[in-house]
Amino acid sequence: MPGYDVVVVGGGLGGLSAAAAMSRLGARTLLVERHPKVGGYAGAFKRGPFQFEASLHALSGLGDPIGGTPLARYLDYLGVLHSLRFEKIDPIYHSSGPGVEITVPGGVEPFKEALAAYFPLDADGIRTFVDDCLSLYRKIRPLEESLARGDNTVLQSLKRPLALSAVVRAMPQTVEGRLASLVRDPAARLVLTQIWGYFGLPPSKLSWFWFCGGLATYLNDGAWWPVGGSRAFADAFERAIRSAGGEVITGVGVRKILAQRGVVKGVVLDDDREFKARTVISNADPMKTDDLLGQNGFPLWYRLHLGTLEVSASTVNVYAAVGKSARELGVRAHETFISGDLNQDAAWDRVAAAALPLNLVAACYNLVEPGASPDDSSVWMLTTLSNGAPWLALDKGAYDSHKKAVADAMIAMVDRRYPGFAANLRRTEVSTPYTNIRYTGNTGGAIYGFSNRPWSHSVLRPGNDTPIKGLYLAGAWTRPGGGFQPAVISGRLAAELARRYLGINRHTEG
Image 1 (tube, helix red, strand yellow):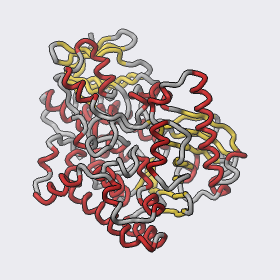
Image 2: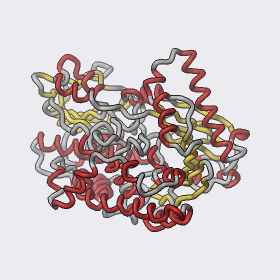
Image 3: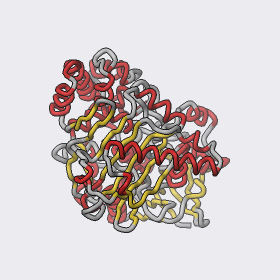
Image 4: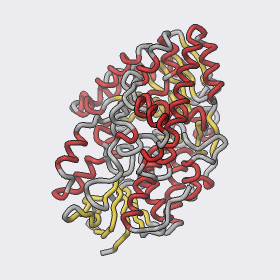
């Protein structure tokens, strides 16, 4: 029976990052991915001349110019960063809603001043909100850098009492709690916090701490696009693994994680191949990881802890090829947030019930990836959050009709903003939470792991270690959280724990 120092279960970005790091450290590494291609949500697919993104909107944390940030240094160490070419995304989005049409630039001052000029009655509050966000981010940056370096003793990075005090005060706060006293106009509040969809909760429920990290990273470090899309990004990780001596198996999954007396021993694949392993890093969600352990699974206390955490929202995506170019349709930014109501809690109520949406984001990829379709056309991904549980309760007939109704509503919303969109559709495909479950195995089709409420974000999530010795977690469900940048960091955190367990004296660099 072949043996490895580490077997990585699942080839999402967390698993890819962990496998690349372990391979680079010289560990005998095997990554196993059920699908023919690695990447998980970092994927793309082609239909004729049209290339569609599975989920990527933009990459954060690379720095502006690229390099110098802990994430960029880590990707450089792995050999990923300089095997890719990146284009800066600016403007970062367009916001369209009742009485609102504004294109929002990147950069701290341009962002603040564009919104202040558009909403002059709330200008001071807008500036204060952004400044407060950046101020908190400067205090939590050492924490972020510790995580990005793979340092699991994160609280040691907050040695200054004032910084620690600010972080502790921010932990239980929501975005709405910080915003309410500063900005009165609902339209201004909508545009200012428009990217809440990236974090899976509306401002009234979203962690202020987590939101600040996301917005400040976008404004400070820029939003970036890897040329070739997320497929190129994932492929760069696979090349890094192989070039460092690691192995990758695709097209077959892991059926079982072997453990005895609380110590991991290896894995069994769907085709009955068995591999010994001194450590295992699971990119599957913690509940699925427990299932893979079978009767040797997590202790009851750990399962109960997981059960107290809320699973994040899933998505409905409409992938659309349109027989008009972005220019002909009047697209101003690669992402347009379309809101049917300024009340973001009303929009969230629709998400929670998986009802017809009040808001969505329409990404037109030709503005960042011109070769995604022929010149006389454009490719789009329309995305709305939608909880998975209500979809799972539908029978086949109800599922099909609801899927069509939601997709039709989304297309109509985009057509009202960009007339001619619907009339020129060449093809569409629709994914739902069921699709996400089938593709990733995530509980409820979640896209952010556990939700980013004030009690379940970043360092408040389950750690990358587990009660099973030698078994570690990577991906959105563990630290630091969901999204492309956090998933990559999670893989490094898991790799650092595996490195120490194996007694490897070298460190992941960057």
